[in-house]
Image (cartoon, rainbow, N blue to C red; front, top):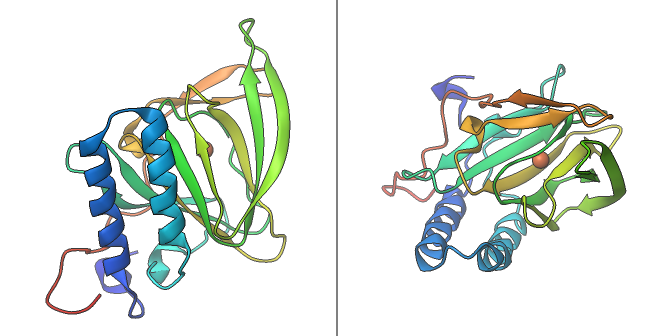
Length: 204
Ligand SMILES: [Fe+2]
């Protein structure tokens, strides 16, 4: 991807700008995780209620693996906003986040399998559920942090918008084998350019 193809069609980037501004306001008002997840879920629900703002370059699947595109990172790295794009049949490994996170489905459907880690190190599968367009889920070390996400559509990509309480691509996290054995990873991002939310000279 390059800067020329970053925006393929006119989209309403002001919607994303309003979201990140409101989220920064929320984090300035409280550091309580429960309050952040509750109010943040309402903001994310509003953002994903309309599918007219995500540039195509950040919704593009890769045939080899799911994609994690950075859309915005707070200047103090208090939060980041990411689009996840799964091609048909693609799945994450079982993984954790280490920080709070919100997941909202913009397009398609996602299967979420939740896991709990026993003090002995083993993993317990706590069940699965489907998250549909417009729905929001939350994770954190406090409420449950280990899951595996799979595209719930067999014939088309699914896209979700995630918000995390850190610059998530730089956080040292872990993937887990089915027996609970952890493996450290830092995800990074698939993109080298991000959407320009700040050009107010025209309606974006
Ligand atoms: Fe996740």
